[in-house]
Length: 60
Image 1 (tube, rainbow, N blue to C red):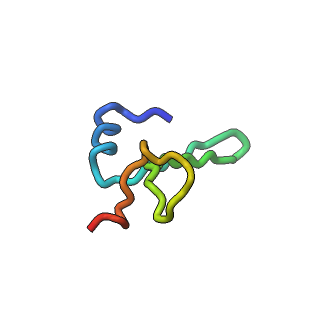
Image 2: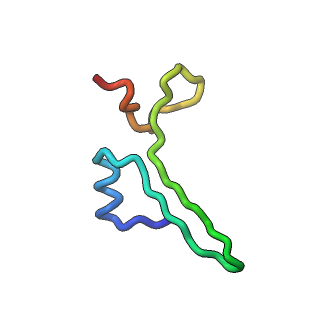
Image 3: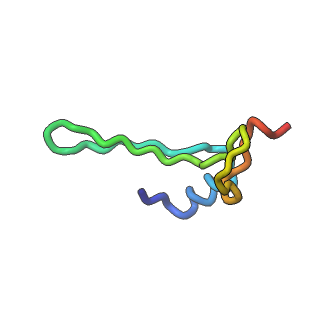
């Protein structure tokens, strides 16, 4: 999925969680695309979450 640079930068720095798009496919089918920020988990996890976005539910 490609996002225009300006829109991507606004998304990175802003409160928008993601983008959604639906494409028409042959034979009346549709492809639903969803691109969302990856927030840190609310519970402790063994996985590396250092590059995740801060979870808004943990911020005061």
